[in-house]
Length: 132
Image (cartoon, rainbow, N blue to C red; front, side, top):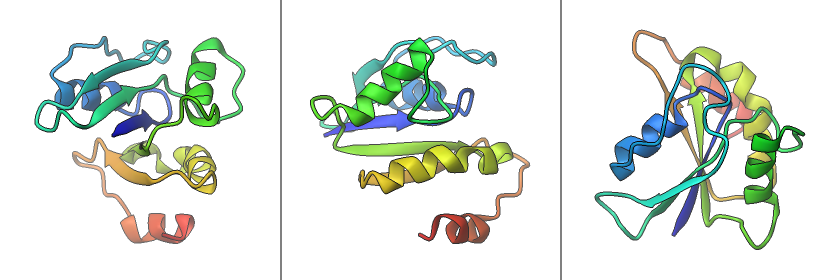
């Protein structure tokens, strides 16, 4: 099963990818570090093939790295079986536009709220916004 990790820049997608796959893809607190897709099987479940995509705020972005993400989700030949949408708990509202775009496309999706250390997350409010 191919699973794409998608989210805004610097929300922790690559750190999650590295943790789940045992890989060491480059991470940084600067936007634009992930500029291509990284792929690897999950360590504990090799049948899960994870795809780490560059961060984006919209599926209709114009920057080259964002177009990698756009193509992965919009091109029928590249579409994943499922999408894990990674949200930074400190910036949930700024992630909603991209999240809604992915959900409206009908992708099987899981929403992961990341970086929750010391940050209160209003999950019921998030559920209301997304109507899930």
